[in-house]
Length: 398
Image (cartoon, rainbow, N blue to C red):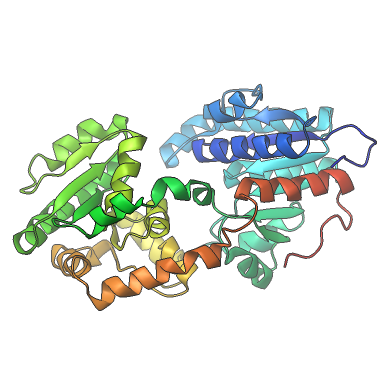
């Protein structure tokens, strides 16, 4: 595909503000080069995008801040980088501007670019979680986002109902890793063998592990009295010390693995899992592993959440399935007896286990895994906008 300004291949400005966005941005850049070999890139990204040839305007880490105190401390830097990013876009207008995740930053970039040069097509890659909270963000994006690329299959309909921008389902990046998550015949036999292998996933942040670790340990010990189990706890190398401190008092101790290959091997062999709520629950569902999800946040955060969060579930697998097949225990409902009962039932051929297995078996059809990869689908939309510009460039999402 070539843009509207002759035979020159598209100039793409890409901005990512966090590690997950860098991964998505890098995969998109690879797909764009495959579809349009002469494509050129400018913008902001991390190591993955750098490996694809991007010279970042500044370190992506300047945009990463978690928690109110961190945001306040980095606010002068973030505001300076916001201005620099907008000025760089406007100084040499690209054929398309792609903003990946990091909504608090990228939405401000989009609004300022649109106000000063309305001819630049703008693509937002990853929808904010408007189906859970702050649903007004959907309609707020419409004036400055020409195409929203959705990771989850229910998101286009959510944005249609909320008056959001044109939304195109392209697929979750995990869909490109299904071969790594799903078992070989030998690993499938291990899933059915005794003792069952159970994954323990207490979170990827220190506070998550600290808040939920003791309950996980007590619940696993209680389940272990009735069921022989082999426990494996995948974690990040930077969290290994904290995890070892956390499990030191657990009566039943899991094996800790810290590299990606060992984690994936455990996923392919696991019979069930106990997990902190998060993206990992979708990973488990796509791997076909029945699981229990739990989460606990601070008291003040919980009070705010009860007032602003919508819906009956925060589990991605439940949202995709359209029913609450994965039991979730949040805040005061995250108790040892609740975890014991739910996990124990998954170690047997129970209706609860069968219900999850049936739901997860339908995910290939729901996600539409046949056909192009998610990054290739995303690249198709980006190139169409780069070629045709804003007015009437895209058909209505199907």
